[in-house]
Amino acid sequence: MAQVTVKPQQQGSGFERAVRRALSIDEIGVIVAMLGICVFLSLTTTTFLTEQNLISVLRQSSYIGIMAVGMVFVISMGDIDLSVGALLMFTSVTMSVLFRDGYHPIVVIVAGLALATFCGFCNGVAAVALRIPMIIVTLGTLSIFRGLGLVITGGSPVSIDREITSGWFFTGLGEKAFGIWMSAWAMFAVALVGWFLFNQTAFGRRVQAIGSNRQAARYSGIRVNRYRIMVMSLMGFIVGIAATFLLAFQRGGNPASGPGQELYVIAATIIGGTALTGGSGSVIGAMIGAIIVWLIQNGLVLLGIEPAWGTVATGSVIIIAVALDYLIKRRD
Image 1 (cartoon, rainbow, N blue to C red):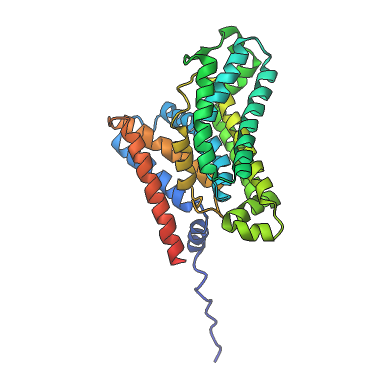
Image 2 (image 1 turned 180 degrees about the vertical axis):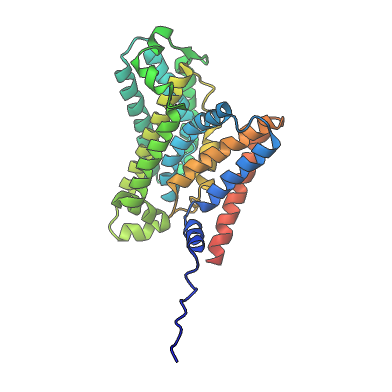
């Protein structure tokens, strides 16, 4: 009698394989969370799914998303930067003063990026030279950067002449392309470059190695102090990019625009899957985390809830995300 060969069913159907592949994506949790919030808001409000609202959420989250890319490197290395919000303000108001004084846009952009990078470099050098935790250093520079921003502006917003803002610089950076604000396109571009640097280069692997075990990384030949300074300089440079697009949209610098932004950046990074204990992270997850943070803020407004509850909600999400991260690690 001929034998009938039965195909093994362990691989399952094409749909099941697709589901397994989707579940294996590192960012699947944060993606599902984002989609869940969108579904909830679309069912409970009438204006959430409007084009204008969605584009606005993307723009508002873009500055946080850009900075969250840099924060992935910082936290994955085992450090944390509390000064990013103050540095964002300091850089943007300094650039606005240079614009107001008649400097060429290229000079202003280069000066802003150089200033932010130098401030990040100083954070790294101070932590390494003084041998104190980065969180303490940046807690101090948070006040320094904020104070310097207030000093150079006198505590008042700095507006830029309309003739300057209509030039080639702001026409591109402060406007829309294909219906989406340029700052959102910048967020996607920075996230793509950040993903490649973090996941596909020796630099990214060494940063994660330092975060996993700093002493072991040092014994393996990695110059830990040099990498800490490099990562903090990179963080500053990325803040400079965010400040450039913020300035382009606002058409000026506002000393009240920075405080509190560090909370959102850290929240986006942690929500996106970067372990607070260091050693691992997700650049794409951090970008999605930034969108989630602003979806929460936007949803509270649309639901008629006091906007101040947004900070409460963000803090609660941070605690939940960190708690889940620890629970998952304990299982492993």
